[in-house]
Length: 141
Ligand SMILES: Nc1ncnc2c1ncn2[C@@H]1O[C@H](COP(=O)(O)OP(=O)(O)O)[C@@H](O)[C@H]1O
Ligand SMILES: [Mg+2]
Image (cartoon, rainbow, N blue to C red; front, side, top):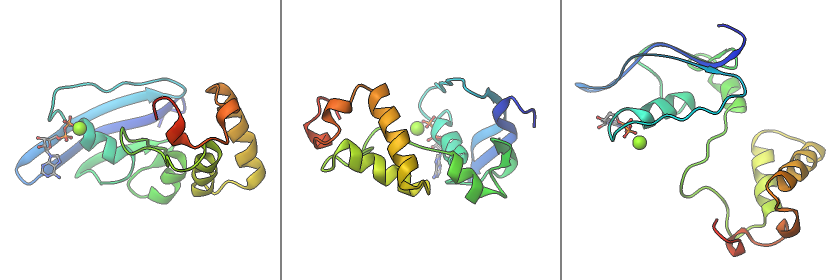
C-alpha cells in the first residue's frame, strides 16, 4: 500500500493438499532494490516466485506489485513483471537483437521503444559489438 514499496505480501498462505508451502508470509520490497530470496530445498521459494509472476494464486492474503493487486489485476501485473529462468532463458538460434525484439513485442512495445531500450541494454551489458551474432556463439549463454 505504501508507495515506496514495489512489492508487498500481506499474510500470504499457500497449501498443496495437506502441505503448507507458505504460512502467513509478510514481505515488503522497496522500489529499485535488489532482493535475494534464499532458503533450503522445500522452503517455498518457487511457490512464492510463482505467486509474484501471477502463475498461481495464494489461498489467502494479498500480493501487491507496483500498486496492483496480483490476484484481481493479473493482466496489468503481467505487464510489469519479467521473469528469467535459469534454463532455458533465451533464444540461442537468434541474435541479441532478435531476443530483444521478441521480448519487447511481448510487452507491447513499439519499434522505436524496442530500439531505444535495446540499444541501452546492449550498451549496458557490453554487447553492442556482437548484437547481430547468434546468441549461441556467445561465451556463456
Ligand atoms: N505443485 C505442488 N504440489 C504439491 N506440493 C508442492 C507443489 N509445489 C510445491 N510443493 C511443496 O511445497 C513446498 C515448497 O516447495 P517449493 O516452493 O518448490 O520450495 P523451494 O523452491 O524453496 O525449494 C515443498 O514442500 C514442496 O514439496
Ligand atoms: Mg525452487
